[in-house]
Amino acid sequence: MPASKPLSSRAEAAAKIAANPAAYKVCEGCNSIVGGGTDICPNCHSYRFDASSTQVVRQARLLGSREQTSVTASDLT
Image (cartoon, rainbow, N blue to C red; front, side):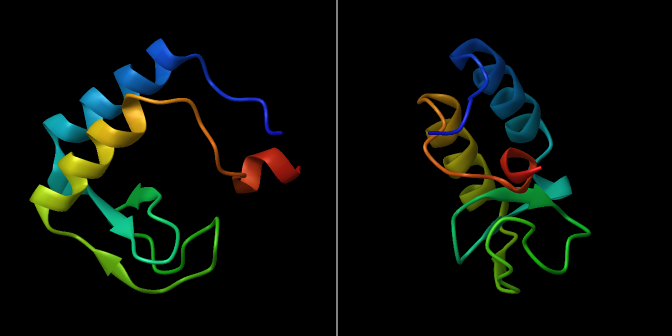
């Protein structure tokens, strides 16, 4: 299982994302939140994203309220 950030750290990151959703988008392959300039998801290599502010805020709140359950690219290095 990947080492995850403490829940408080995830909540802080989620709050920053929710405060500026236009700078992010949600990967439609794995539901990760990535920077707005990302063309290919670093986690699942998908190229389909939802950049709507509503979806970014919704996903940030969801991910910020629970422990990490996915493996990210940084977990593999």
